[in-house]
Image 1 (spheres, rainbow, N blue to C red):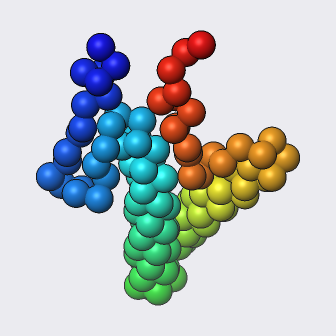
Image 2 (image 1 turned 60 degrees about the horizontal axis):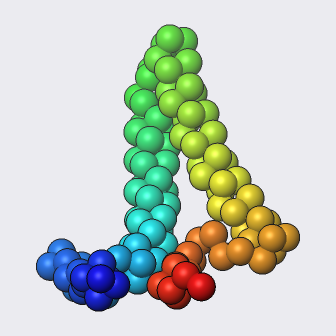
Length: 113
């Protein structure tokens, strides 16, 4: 029964993420977290850049300057939140001794006593 449950999973989109379910998710989750940080960084960059361009091209109009300032502020707040989440995860890793950003699910493969 155990061999049926732990059948090999092959993912054609990500061939390096093969193995049984726990190995797959143990590799997939850190890669997903890295991807989300990359997407968040790119979102910050483009929001900040567009806000800066809006500010430059506002022509002194107070409403447009306020909109651009708001967009830049939101981009910076998003970046601060993203870095804070990463820092809290690293702090919890240090304090608790649990690898949150590199999850190891291999203990789940051990048969129950």
